[in-house]
Length: 142
Image (tube, rainbow, N blue to C red; front, side, top):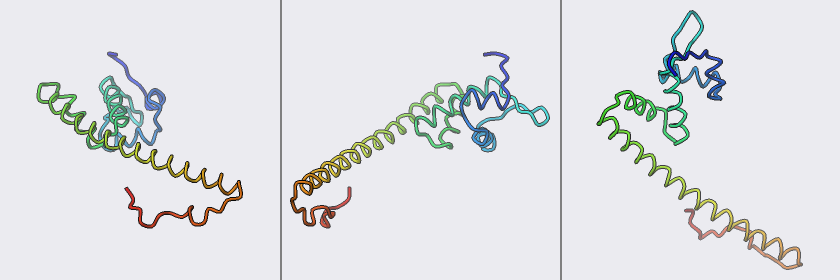
């Protein structure tokens, strides 16, 4: 990848990001393109950083966490790798909790859908559902 220089437009196209996103990453100093007048050019370093930024976003890291991650990445040493593992472990816990919360939301939504479908069947067969469609006031939200 040595000697690569991408223009602003090429960078947006390569990483499928909007110009606004790319400018924002520059504004918060996650990226530091070379400038030639009003033109911006992105070197190998900036391309690598963009790859890491997008990975971090995919993995749910906040931008400040990504900033720390980029600093760790550029240190390239034992302590940097240990810090990265610690950061990754913390984010894995966050993602696992989000997954558990989503599984619970899916379960309760499926249950509500199934109960409502049963009420519809009862109504369609001429049965009286009374107040069965109302929420249970004694139920505590999870």
